[in-house]
Length: 114
Length: 113
Image (cartoon, rainbow over all chains, first blue to last red; front, side):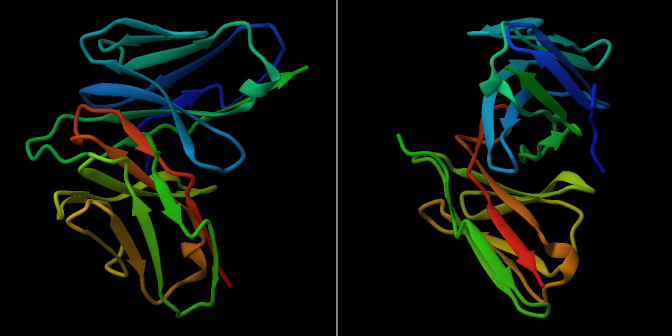
């Protein structure tokens, strides 16, 4: 089962509007990553935010992290039709053996209408 | 530099058969992880390899196995295929694993009939 939940499950907006997606997780983390997936293809890495960071920007993307609430948000500003995709958050909990295991949220399906 | 390469992209197999999927990570990356994506279960961790050693394994039956070669390329094998194994299998490459970014390939779409 997945650790994270994303909200909303689906989002439909007009081109040019902003899109906000939220992610919640359950255990302590090293960092949180956001990915985009187009039509069941591979995951495209968008941004990584470390547990000691509160906000990070990359182009039209803004990610916030609140470790006290175990939540993160992804804001896409001035959305374009090409942003239509599913968006996932993924966390990697700290572990003694340094092994790498990402726990994914359930994803938000974003539709940007032209 | 080249991204993560997964082969084949699509595969159709019959129940009971076995299948081997391949993943070539980004040059210099030593951690390779595998994930299964299905509509019902979402993205689930299968296993992670680092320098030819399996460091972690997800909650999948023993029919799912993998290995990593000295050049960091990885393969996963599924034996005695079941209909429920139909999924998109994704490989992730990371420089060192924990704490670093993970980059994914395009995936292998496996259909079991």
